[in-house]
Amino acid sequence: MGILEVKNVGKRFGGLQALGDVNLSVKENTCHAIIGPNGAGKSTLLNCLIGKLIPDTGSVMFDGQSVLGRKPHEINQMGISRVFQTPEIFGDLSVFENVMIPCFAKRDGSFRMHAYESCDAETDIIAKAEAMLDEVNMLEKRNVVASSLSRGDKRRLEMAMCLSQKPKLLLLDEPTAGMARADTNNTIDLLKTIKAKGELTMCIIEHDMHVVFSLADRITVLAQGTPLVEDTPENIKGHPKVREAYLGE
Ligand code: ADP
Ligand code: MG
Image (cartoon, rainbow, N blue to C red; front, side, top):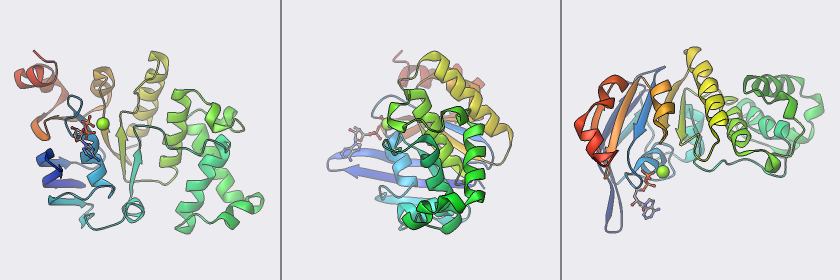
């Protein structure tokens, strides 16, 4: 039994069946990649896992508990964090302030402005935020206003914000989309370091096959809302169905 068990999940938008009958089992402390063409339903599936969308059918179990019917913040508190397709950071705040927010939220259960305002006295939170920024190699950019960061750094900042919540499951929706090669490689290295600690399960949606094959233990190929095949990266590479659906051959 995996830490994440998705069974027979379906989701329809009006006349469009975005997800047909999705089954997915993700083992604890592994990296599971979901690949597939644009419009395959990858983001819709992730949205069903975090409570942003409610599936029409099926079940989603995380760590032995159902996530269905729970609000996104409740699911987050269960231990699921997500790096969005478009980075969701506080553009007007500094890098350091951005990471302080989830550190407070983790400790207090919710983010309270008065707690943040008294941050001078909150040495434990400051130490945690600094350690987090160090982990993603952004400590020297701590005073930079977040909106002025490069795309790659915005992603890294968002990852630091997610990781500071100490999630059990990190969901990543195209974490290297639009990144230059150097930033992509930095992201791969960062995710490899996180993975090597063996304390976190990752589910990654990614178009860049170099990223997928560098990180994934298992790969699910989604096409038109239905998983075509699930296997190891080695077996996926040469799979005829994958070449047909994903590479258009
Ligand atoms: P992917 O992430 O694999 O590119 P999505 O999950 O974003 O695909 O989309 C799957 C399908 O569902 C697409 O055809 C998309 O246009 C449609 N879709 C996604 N979200 C919505 C929505 N909120 N309302 C209507 N259609 C949607
Ligand atoms: Mg998407």
